[in-house]
Image 1 (cartoon, protein in one colour):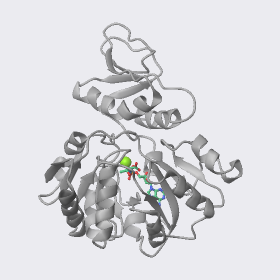
Image 2 (cartoon, helix red, strand yellow; image 1 turned 90 degrees about the vertical axis):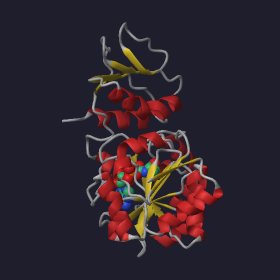
Image 3 (cartoon, helix red, strand yellow; image 1 turned 135 degrees about the vertical axis):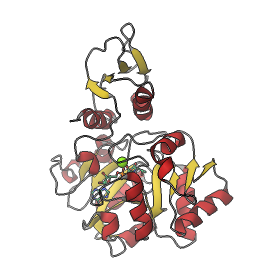
Image 4 (spheres, rainbow, N blue to C red; image 1 turned 60 degrees about the vertical axis):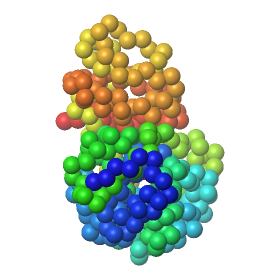
Length: 320
Ligand code: TXA
Ligand code: MG
């Protein structure tokens, strides 16, 4: 496996060719790092599942380079979904749409839908554009971590998670720290009304501002499987305790307005919700590096991206 720092145009071309040849390329997006494979190559995609140790019925998001690639992968696209795509792509949003014949069972986990996203990180966009130029249709990319663990937000996290499982011809593109830090908002657009399956940086308020309230179903009970919806997920080794007062020796994550009690190990004190999201996963990892047993997190209240932060924390805390 080769690690390429801030890839040049030539190196992006090399990475696109590696994908075309059936190898895996981990790359930065604005949300988290993804582990990419040619989304039409069953063998390459099956390697993604084995590297991640992920059950094969969990569908992958297909990343595309522009809206005019949507029709390749999806059919019967509702008008409101196009409106969202135009407004929020490239960006941290995934649309679930009815799949075309190109989206095979090995991508969709045997479902009749496909998840699609155009990321905004310049390296992922350049890679997607180059992959399309050489004839690629899309890059399947889950977060580049072991199944159920914390998503990587810097390249060294990717190496820590899956470095040993990558082969000689696989690549890791290092593009620094992800600016959002939490996975994309996933929106089910297979009905007349949309549903949020996974909250993220594209918030409900932003969606409602673009579409009308009539288009929204708040009921999240759905036939659609989302891997983050399986309880225990996004989890570090340390146990997460929500909204408690930390005691000596415990890790502590809270907005900077909360002071640390004596001998508590402050892992993060973000001054905004954006910072909270951006640094959350790296502070959970830091706790594991320090060998801490407990991490107390003071959850942010309110709307916006706080909803996504609480979603991930609830799942990370929910362990058996
Ligand atoms: O921000 C992100 O979305 C990152 C970056 C790399 O793009 N990717 C990511 O992928 O988080 P992953 O595989 O870790 O999570 C994708 C989620 C899974 O929970 C999966 O079940 C859901 O998307 N998903 C994908 N295709 C789906 C589909 N057809 N129907 C329902 N859920 C789907
Ligand atoms: Mg994931």
